[in-house]
Length: 370
Image (cartoon, rainbow, N blue to C red; front, side):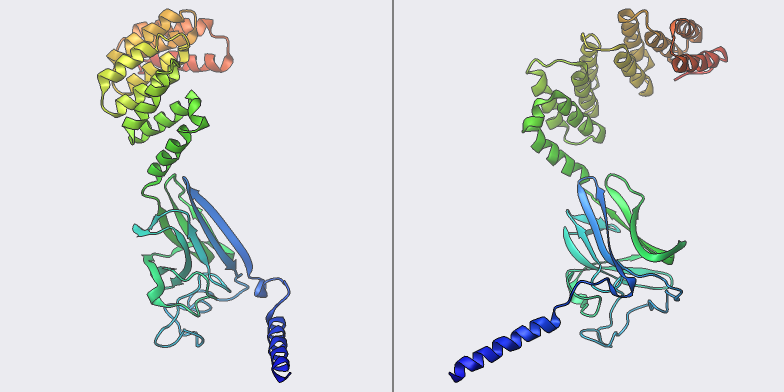
């Protein structure tokens, strides 16, 4: 009986403890609202979660947020183990990377990290801690650092609320930035294998239902050609589709682009010579290929392409302008002007007519039009 009463007493004590420590949901203290910002670098997802205090008329840098490391006088923060700033308020500011990244040129594995900072008048240290679940910086230990990066603070417009955002956004890089009061703390994040991640995704998708759509094959091959990566496999994707007797101009163009990226000029030219004679090849596509050759400083090779477009579509202004561009690129402005004037006569769309008029005026001055 005594043991039973003892057990009940322990249970009641535990229940009382749980009840006393459980809290109802209320707004955050000090208006430090919970905030979150996410940015994608290609397929890589970056997320910063933080609590956002306001300035509220206070002096921030060097005062409310001291420079250097500070003994907070509680838990693991001591004179021997002073703490950085929590880079926000309340619990840990965290940053999550879905894939491996580089921060300020230094590699960092995928995962979630506690984000801390050591402020300074001239430079700041950004700390990525493997401990992402503690409250603030009270439990910070240098031994848990995954990475440190030193950056320079920069002046910014006034921000009442502490805010994180991403600037200088590219496919494989962006600059994360803390902004508060009149200061910004930027740190660059990049993905060194961002293109390879896309290739991996394309490879997966092209072996599924998406691979039966030839337009997807064209898009995938052109991506590889533009980036000059994974070219052998890209060529295989296109050729496998052509082997299924699917023969359209965009497929041939994609194959030509891949071969050109592989520095196989003669093979690429042979593919495109066949492409411009395909039944589905439009005047815009043929002339577009001719202009591509002009851009590549191959005006003599461009001329037969423009002639092929004009032969197939002799009554279109697009083919006539193609001829004008071909002759201009080869130094014959007289013939170029004649074709441009003929194009102007038959064109009916006001916007196109205006564009042709600009070409004519340049040729009349002896100027190049490409």
